[in-house]
Image (cartoon, rainbow, N blue to C red; front, side, top):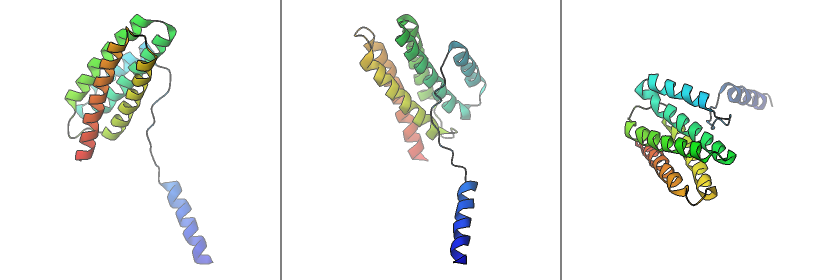
Length: 152
């Protein structure tokens, strides 16, 4: 009985001591200010950290675009999607073998692609080509990040 308690106690303390850090997308509302701050952070970050920061920026811009689209500001939403497309392409081209938090970036990009897919189905016929292009670029960046994860 005493051996059972000590093992149980050991397992409970070990479980409490291990900090499991899962990443989930930040669901705080995006705005122009937070996007500008994150853009500045990406530019100043070392190349090793840029992949995840690009993924965060792409995610925030996509969420902001969705907010603008829902509010009826289609022009601002479209402009943000053009920037998302360019950043996804830039991220895809800048992937390196020593990127930090690559798996988290891939998860975030997958979530962003899901949100863009939702937007594609909810958008007007005229807006779909732009959303589809942004979705394609985000999917390419996500696929490249996933391939780099599996390469390691």
